[in-house]
Image 1 (cartoon, one colour):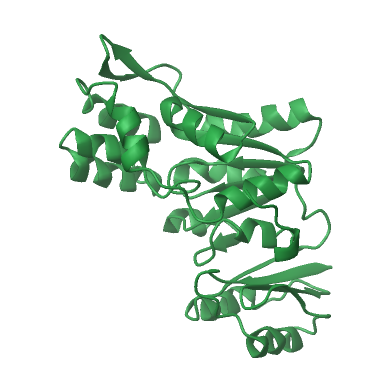
Image 2 (cartoon, rainbow, N blue to C red):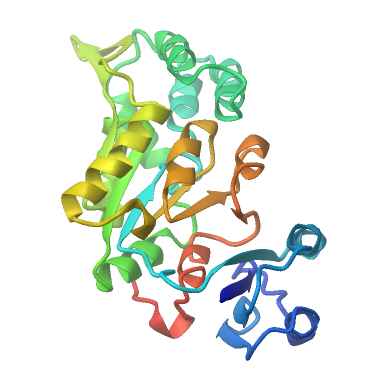
Length: 292
């Protein structure tokens, strides 16, 4: 048995009964369950629809996301999440680079690295080198003035943790930022790269080893083993090429507002919903949500 989930942005609810029931009828599905009126609904289907990607593409033009997944085991015991452009709206290194006067140049490199056009570790070293000499205090200023949470994140964390899940923030960014975001959102642990500082200024280097795509996958395996669960019981979310191994190894890998190369290799692609989409995908309804 499979479950079809349809959802959209809660700020602009456009999911209507006709759209949902027309698809249910076309695919011979079961009873529709509205998880959030106007925002999210699901129904079971007996087999995996052969034309699901054609339907997915058509729904995208209506600003509706769709996922089809096995019905069993949808609720996950681990949330393992990327940070930049996933749990927060920004890329921290781009914001630091803007403070250094090289924002546009670094942002272009970041975009290429996240789309898999550049090798992540080398691209990170090149970008960090341009931050040399910035006062360490710029980190707290960027956190306060420039960094904003992705909508739905606080409710996602609060709800999954209320239902017993463990949460890990695993970023190719920097510990100075993951520590603050993890504490703010309620993650149980965080992993990232460490910016090196000397005499209260950034040295333009990061500590070894660099946390890249291999380290994110390793984190998934290490954390699940420590918790006594399997990767199949994990929900991973990210947007960049360095997230792909983690996304593909998790039981539910979600490409959230992701780069094209990432979407192409993930079965669950959220382009319109916010982070509460990850709750709907697990079968949580609005009434199950825990306030942050």
